[in-house]
Structure formats: C-alpha cells, structure tokens
Picture 1 (tube, rainbow, N blue to C red):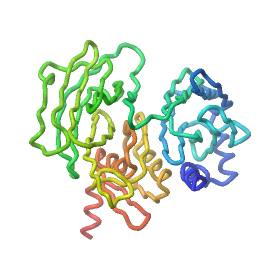
Picture 2 (picture 1 turned 30 degrees about the vertical axis):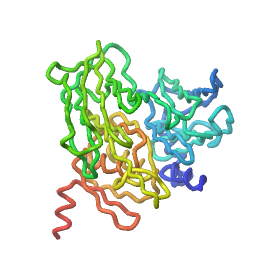
Picture 3 (picture 1 turned 180 degrees about the vertical axis):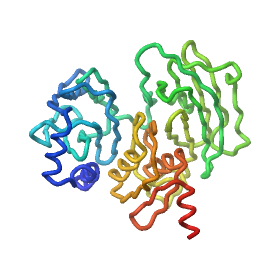
Length: 357
C-alpha cells in the first residue's frame, strides 16, 4: 500500500519517456545540484537543497498523512542529480525521492511520522526544516497556516462574515486585502484562535457576531485588534472538528459537529467529505497545475477543459481531498462531473451547455 501511495505522488512525473526527459533537462538551465541533510537539536532535521540558479518562490507543497509524505514541486527546475532516491534515516526523515517531467521536478520527503515543516528560500538555497514531534490531537498546537512575508508590509481585514454550510457546519469567512498575510491558528481549550500578523482591522469590524440562530456548532465569533495584529476568536459548542483553507484573498474556517455513532468504525463529521486529508500551499499557481496535484494525490483521471485558465493562491491544512477539489472548483467559477474514476472540470456555463445538448 505504501509503495502504491508513493507511486501516486510521482505518477504525474514519471510517465515521460527517457529521450523526452533528456530533452527537457537540456532546455532547463536551473537544476537541483545537491540535497544535503543536517540533524539539529531536539530531533529536528534540516534539508538543504541547492539549485544552480536562484529560485523566485518557495516550492509549493502538499502532504500525505498515511504513509507520511511531504511533496514539493520545483517549477522550471530540472533534477541535476545522478540519482532519484536518497537514503537518509535522520530523525523523522527516512529517504528522499526525486522525479522530473515536463518543466518541473517533484521532491518527496518520505517520513516515519507526520511532522510540521517550514520552508525558507535564500537565493539558490532552499531549506526545509522538519520538526521533531508529531502533533497530538489532545495538545494545543499553534499552526502557522501562512507564513508572514518578509518586511513590515501591513495588511488589513476587509470583512468578517458567518454562514451555515450545506452540511450544517459553521463557516467563518474573512476577506483579506492581500493573499500573502501571515496567519496562525491555535486551539485554547475549547476555543479556536486565529492570529493575522501585521494585519489591521477597522473599528466597525471589531465586534462580536452572535451566530446561535444559524444552528451550527459555533456560538459566537469575536474580532479583536491587538497592536499591529488582528485576532479572531471562535467559540464552538459540543464535540467538533475544524478545517481551514484560503483561496486568494478569502480565508475560511469550517467548524463541523462530530457525530458519535457506535456502529461506525471511524469517528468523524457526518455528513460531509470522506477523502484522505492533505495540505496544500500554492502561491499564484495555475489552476490547471493545482488540479494536476489533486490528480496525482488521488490517482483519479482529471480532464481539464482548454477553457480553464487563470492562477490561484491556495492554502489548505488537513482538508479532505474531495473538499479541496470543491474549493478549487467553486473559487474559480468551475463545475465538475464524475464518471467512474474520471472527473471532467470546466467552466460552469460550459458544463451546463453540454448537459443541455
């Protein structure tokens, strides 16, 4: 099973024939020239990746929970190493796999357990820092949902709204002035706290939203100014779980009720999404490329219409893949139809027109 899931991570990158790969490497001037590792105090591991030329942005990444994997995509970068598998066995990092196709290289970190990680870029040096401890469901852990940009750039919250989702979940919707605002999420007891770094909130939005009449797990939502930062505090009730995601300038937290069913083998929200959870972090990436990542992760065949264009900034933390696909489709005005293991994605009006034929 583990080998099959790793194949899914690489499936979109290994189908290219040998002579095409050689041709692509010849056209890409930037290459990964080394991958080194360093054990740090506290069981952390640093992965240092050097490229022949500076890279503009941190590589987009997504995670797989079982087995534990972190996949990082390097667009416009070839694999300049003479090998595709590197054994490591340091801390939680067991090995590294590289694969290239078209104009990108995917680097997969094969882990012994799920750990948090951060990515920093300094010219042609990219450092991936793997933390030591696996987050426990019983401990309060702060999640750096979106790292703040360097410098003193100030952002702002333009609106805070609340809605009831189609499955009864409470949905907090935050409109931001810029998609690159830094966001931290933590749980304090039974409360969800979201910090927006270097982010202003106007006086008219500094308020409490009492949302009990929506009949969701959320009682109220507070928006608070804290110096140069802003904070949103969500007070749920009962047993619940939350997921957060960001599409361009819109940041959303869903709070779902957990239904205990003694006949169920798995405890979780019901009804809702059932796909394996993944995390994504993409900055201004082509929508078609994001859909390809979902296809790689699931093993499904996703056919994207030629009329699907545009870019997307997307951040997801531990979101079921079928919900991730819904988020991408809905945020760009698209629609999808599934037949067997094939999913067609096209603009909503194009799908509606075809169904009328």
